[in-house]
Structures are given as structure tokens and as C-alpha cells.
Length: 460
Image 1: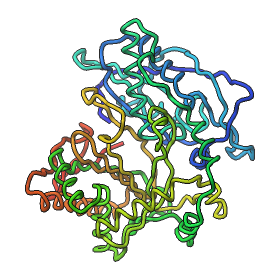
Image 2: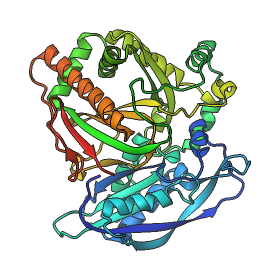
Image 3: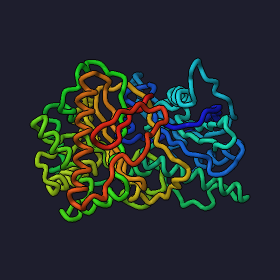
Image 4: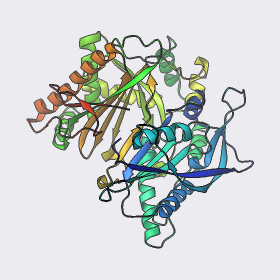
């Protein structure tokens, strides 16, 4: 997270219960909440204020955004160790006012924000979201809006919706309009949960595939040595800037020539590297989205569930088939499917992959606002890899436990993976792909040269 030096202001809110309209949370919300009250369960979006606006306008715009989205007007209740049934309770969210978040000794705005969100954006907070404004010391720098929310209410797509909605509401206020006037309607996520539960049961083939996947009782784990992960360790986060826009176009051409999409080429490269070093193929958790109908495109919610991808054959066409299989596995209500196994396991050492191509999303984000996806700093025993494609190219972000062995194993694996993707683009289309074209995600990032794409290790 890149932020100016300055003062962090938090807009505090309160909730008032609405009686008699509680609902059942989704399968994934319930799984998330089952881990209880904890820090580090949030995600956030940061962006520069689009034009000069006082804090009152910022607060009014945010309250208008909250009022648009049903999931931001619910709180989780029960199920936190007390034996009660977990429910989503409806609330109204009202203003309390702005307050300065005083920094502790040596805290910069990033540390202040993470402390605020760890406290305010946990599963059973009321509400479990918060808006902050970082006002810079330098008058030539723009203030930065940071919106944090517990993961139970949002996915990565939702963060883009919130950014767009906030800027639109702020613009409406500046034009003397009711905030939200220019925005499309937003269906509530609870409606999506009800619709999913009412669909026909998953076909036998889906039950059979999940039975095969969970035959050993665990979700996929990272297949290379991570060292001692008997307890969660502080995280290491590495960011690789792999391809610029020309390089992405070249890799897309390679994929199209093989009759697949770029995600299949990435899965093929991972499979190749794992087979080379571990003698195994790719086996990982793969989050898949359920916004298949356009009515959900402008909604905020957790429209993601965890599926599993298995690729033993590194041929891109085989990997494309594996992606389709994983999407199918996550396209049904998973509660009934996984009930015989006690739900989806929480497996130490779990390995997960996320693929997000911002160019394909029906949400326009102004890159001049310097938008940033911000994650909590956590302790972990698993490996998570995010592939992000946007207007600046292909980027790979990886989180893994901080052990001496994992730094070597995962760092080297990332070197080979990213270099392999560059090689595929260059070999297929000539040298129009470049490496390391973007700067570090964080101005304080510690970097070291590599023979592959730019590498930065991002501090918490």
C-alpha cells in the first residue's frame, strides 16, 4: 500500500437493528465466520480523491454507497463459539462523525490503517466496514480514500464497485444531485444466496469429483518444502511485474493460437514447473465467481467460492479443461455437497491460486486515481498466488510463510514461473514482451535483482 505521509481520519458509524428480517449467510460467509473474531480478516481498496472535497462530502458519499448495498447493512450474529445459529442481521448504518486516528510510536499511515481495520473490520463487528481519509502533509498531494471491509461481505470485484460508486456519489453531490443518481440498481447479495439455495441439487458427477478431491480429508497443499509450518508464521509478500501490455498481448496471441485463454497458459506453466521440481502436477484451490448473470455485476458481496483445480498434463488444452472442471465444481451450492465431509476443510499448508483480469470486468476504473487493492498483514502456513491482469500488464503477487526454506523454495518457484511466462510470450510472438516494466508496489519495498521479472518483497 502506497500512501502519502499525513493524518488518518476515520469516519465512525453506528448501527441500529432492524427487527424480524434476518437471513441465513452464504456457505462461504459461514465458513469465514466459523474462525471467530480475529484481526486480519479484511480487505480494502485505496484511491486518490478524484477532486477536492471536504470531509462532510466524503462522509455523505460513503453513506450513500452503504445505503445502496444490502450486504453493507447486515452484521453477522451468533455462531462464534456460543452454539447459536449464525445469522445475518439487518441494520441501518448512521453517522457518528470524523475522528483522528493518532499514530503510535513510529507508525506511518499504513500501520495506522491496518490497526484500525484489524479492530473495525472483523467478522462480528457492527458494522464490519470503515472508511478512512488520509490527508497528506504535502498540499500538492491528493488525499487518499481507504475503504476497509471484513471479507465476509466483499470480494475483489466488489472493491471496484465500491470505488466506482463512491466516486459517482461524490460527483453527484458536487453537481447538486442526490448521491447515486447516475448509478444502476444494485441487487442485494442475500438475494443471490437465496437463489443459489433454491437451484436444483448438484449432479452426481459433481458429488463424485468432490469425493475424489476430499478422499484424504484435506484441501490441496503447496507441494514443495516450506520448512517448519507447524504453526502459522508471519507472511512474506512478493510482487512480480511480469509482462507489460505488449507482453500480455503476445501471451494472449500464444494462447489463442493454441485454442485456449491466457489463464490456461499460466496453469500449464505452473504444472510444468511443479513437475520439474516436485514430480507432481498442479493441484490447488481455485476461487471461482458466481456473478454469471448481469444483475449481479453492480452488486457488492462475496460472490466467490473455493473450488479445486488439478492439472497433471502440462498441455494448455488439458489445463483449459481442468479450469472448466474447476468452474463446474464451484457452480453449485456447496453446503449440501460438502456436508458429508463436515464442510470445506481448513488445511495447513493450503495452496490457492486466484486469476483476475480487470480488463474483462464490466466496471470502469479510472487509473489516474491510483487504485490499490490492500490486504491485511497476517500469519500464514499456506501459499496464495494472485495473477492480476490490468491496463499496465500482468502481475503476480504471492503470500507465503516466512521461513528460511520457504523464501528459497517459493522465491525460486516464482522466479521460474514468471520467467516461463515471459519465455512463452517471447518465443511465440517475438521480442515484444518486456520484463520488469512497472515499479515496486510500495515505495519502501525491499528489492533484489533477479534474472526474471521485477521482484519486490513488500513489508507489512
